[in-house]
Length: 414
Image 1 (cartoon, rainbow, N blue to C red):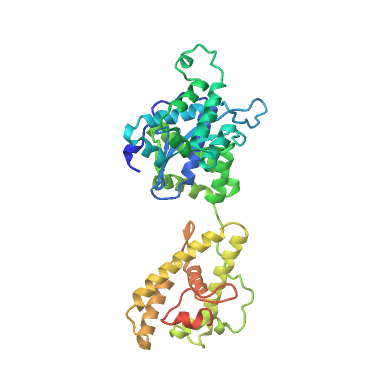
Image 2 (cartoon, helix red, strand yellow):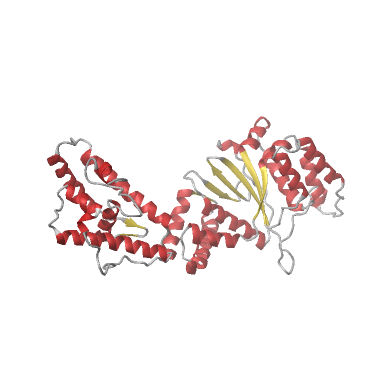
């Protein structure tokens, strides 16, 4: 979206401590949800919180209410002051656009009221969803909120805000008089967020892989770090890359995954080790022969120690299946690059040249330390990973090989 389609908000009201905390927590929540490289999240710049992405620009209004002494969830009522004030704020933002750009502005942006009030049974919200789903016309919707306006009492307050129309009835009148109300109401939504802290804690644990025991400390440090940068450096927005740099310091500190790869995980090796597919692949390029028993045993130990260590870590929830898959995808990518470099000009019938290039390929592979989460693996376990990926068992087919034709020979039917 073009920059001139974004309107800066300069008219924020002072908020109570709870409202401010709720707003700031939502800012952090959106930072943690950034997914694409071009995402940017802003705090109190264009709206309470706002976000730019490839899909457009989103304006978030945050409204927090304490539900009495028992702290119960409050329902969003039909004449809720925050609801109609929020819509009036968005009307004001739209009116700051050049008149000939207002329709495009509303069509290309989104507007979200985020609140801890339950909006599910709010009559206006239910009618609005019908309009957005094509079940009723805009005229029907306007007739509905016009009737709400007519049945709303005038404020008895005599303060300056009341005199300026900054009342619930005054805000509803703003919508009635707004020429582009149909477009705004198509673009708005209401999001129920009763407990942002809990949502952030869950995101840190399940999406950012912070161990449960460290989540509260990581949360407090993240909150303090972002807040300090806001007050000391006036840092009111983050790109995805900027936030990643900030968050990496926290994740490295609190992930604290101390699992280690284990040697000698097999008390007894299986028989006929030379029948393992990864051993056959090494024999095919003259790296070893059937008589190299010590090497075959050593390579087999490396393979089993790698895979058993990974399986143990997964079972203990020290690493996820998804993380392991991503790591192996990087390993296969490294192999593919090296394989292409050495084999792309080799004649498949030139056995001597294939063996020569396979030797070079294996030499590079055996000197590669695999990056596994926070550190590089020892060569022993890195080699075990490559041997595992070139092997075949009941769970997987070989993913890598050392010479042309390895897939046809060993994959699926090998």
